[in-house]
Amino acid sequence: MLKEIQHSRRGFLATAAAGIVTAQLAATGTAYASSDFRFAPIKQIKAGVLDVGYFEAGPADGPPVLLLHGFPYSIDSFVDVAPMLAARGARVIVPYLRGHGTTRFLDSATPRSGQQSAIGVDVIALLDALKLDRAVLAGYDWGGRAACVAAALWPERCAGLVSVNSYLIQDIAKASLPVAPSVESGIWYQHYFLSERGRAGLVANRREIARTIWLRNSPSWHFDEATLSRHVAAFDNPDYVDVVIHSYRHRLGAADGYAAYADVERRLAALPAITVPTITLDGKADGVVPANDGKASAARFTGPRTHRVIENAGHNLPEEAPKEFADAVWELVSARRAG
Image (cartoon, rainbow, N blue to C red; front, side):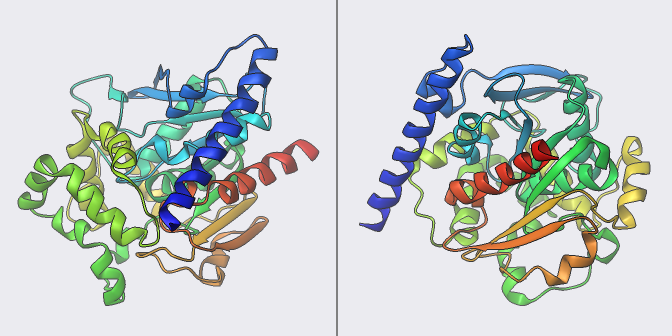
């Protein structure tokens, strides 16, 4: 019964929001159908070292918002959030991260880096390519980390930040220090990916690895096979395995970073403060990152910051609690417009 209610609620929210967006955008001369909120069509734009695949909705002159997904997930995490924000008047941009979906490297010789500096630089490159001076950045997991990196190092490009699990810039110098066993067991895949067996496993079993991680990350989220399939389709990317493996090996000190990002990594090693207006969210049902009151990371946010714990939400918070995530983003958008 709970599963049926959740799916009915999701269908209602997506349908209602998509209908509002369709009417609103039709008035501006741009026609969108509800199917667009399964993220079609996907646009492509050259940005830095990438040809980025992204979805866009909302008025072209609306306040820009970048929604950034995590691993092992895809832009489908924002299937309800994107139309909600577009219906309110935001210009919503939802890119595939490097190694995912239709995003490709422009040069076959470019290292397939997954380190935190690379995904942060990708955010700025995308803003440049889209000719956006500033945007509200909102994400979780890898996407939250990319947003935190961009907000910390290029605050002039970030109008506001929504980050699930607070401050996500990695302290790589302390990567060898243990954490609580309950947390270590939830990040089994990070240790698995340090081995060549783990690389081979990711090549062969990317769907089942995603399913296994999802079940632990979000024990109260009753996703169906169709939802999993939509996300897993984004893993059919020639660079997916290389980017993922480098990401986890680098963060755990088992792989070097690449020269192109050395200066950015040096700056991140200082764990720079985030000065932009920020809302941090924790899912109370997150099975791998325990929800907390936000005080442990408070010193990392020197600008206005609000922390919220979202009931019944796990690690994929935008898809599990889309209204709460969209409300947080819109709160920052509204504050910027009022200012």
